[in-house]
Length: 130
Image 1: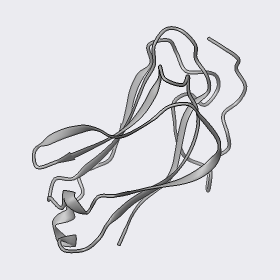
Image 2: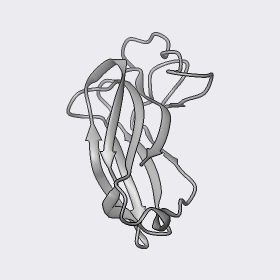
Image 3: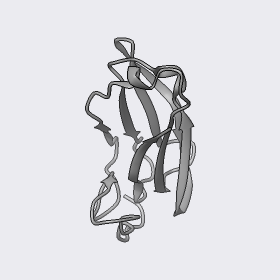
Image 4: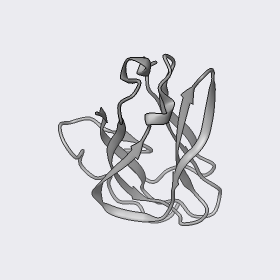
């Protein structure tokens, strides 16, 4: 593992999604944070945004955080992907209006190789906004 250091404090409150709160992520790390099922059919016809704050220190071009969405009966991987560093809390927003199904789910998925490891990705304040 490379470097070290501590994870950032949560953007707000005392909880966040994290790859590893007390060190760098492991070689070949592969983990996911998955939401419960959300009935998006009640928002049909509305513009809906998935928003979250993210802080990341990821081996650029080799390790990734993916945003995957589940809708219409299956996972759709890599709706967005992130690599590299952004070591200030930054707001991200994705229009999810095209995914108005009654079985909608959100997955943040992290993968790493075996070369260099950093502090990882941290997600906070995930919301769906009309």
